Image 1 (cartoon, rainbow, N blue to C red):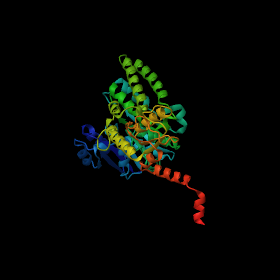
Image 2 (image 1 turned 90 degrees about the vertical axis):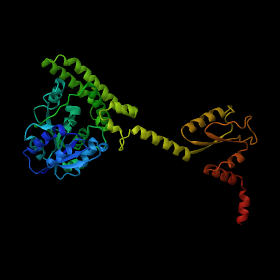
Image 3 (image 1 turned 30 degrees about the vertical axis):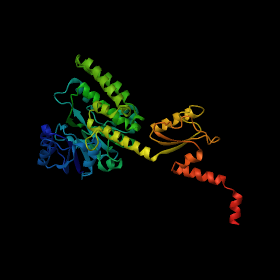
Image 4 (image 1 turned 135 degrees about the horizontal axis):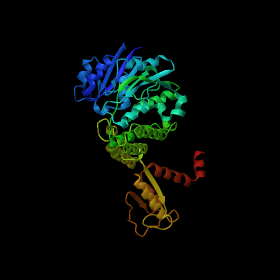
Length: 426
């Protein structure tokens, strides 16, 4: 079993040396370390090279949770890919050995480890680790969706492993996703009928004391991610699991006599729920607002680090200009502005709508039964369109476009004498 350990990094130097020392102390053999770094400003890259890691450096603006890991996986030589994060410190030297051990079973293609709270974790965070990462191992597959719900797809790549050939078979992580790329991968594996193991004896220290604002932003991003994968939401609903989590969290805080955290728990739940629901509605929210609501504001930038909304506005103006040039409408109306009689009023309104949508409009304002009829105010104009008044034939002759040329040909054919044409042929 050859193993490739893939670690995305950015300014990781604070605990990175400790992390790599723990990796080097693992009992596994035949492994490589691949560090893909987003142009760190500290000595992260130097530390990685000191420990013999293969280092890939990318511009910070190109980082993406799914795409960056995929890029590193293409450089991997191992048949087992182990994904870790820079802040997940292995508890002991058998962490990775225990993590990959379930992959010896043919029907298990991926596994993930247990998260142990850091020493500074607050009660809310301690409960999150106990609830999501129990002390017993198990295997999840498609048959567990009804019982586990959305937790069937829990597969944090903080400390996770997957068979490389299967990883490639399901087309890796989604390339462009704000977060939860691991969740989507697990859903694809489960949907294909594969099993995912939870290895409770593969332990890492990993927790975050997020503020309420950070929790709101994190769950906004989760909503954005899941909405982009609507097929998953068609299978499971996150809100059901949220209710069960809240109930057990309250029991835990009361049991541990953490009374002061009970009010905080409700505010936290409100922040998470509100953020998640807004994330599901992100298509209706302007980009500059999404950047404020998101924990990963860089996701809303283009590859040059500029806000997407600016480029969308430029693109929209460009497309509008193209529409005005390329889309031309010939409008025939017996009466037209400013003669608001009969069909004139409706037709004038319709032309205004077309102009507002970027069309170039030519109006032939001429009554077919009275070709010499002219409006009283013959020089009146409607902004954004060209009006040709007077005799129908004269008006059409002023418009040089395919539609009018075809119209003139049709009129000529209709007015020609077929008997004279047959006499010439004979």
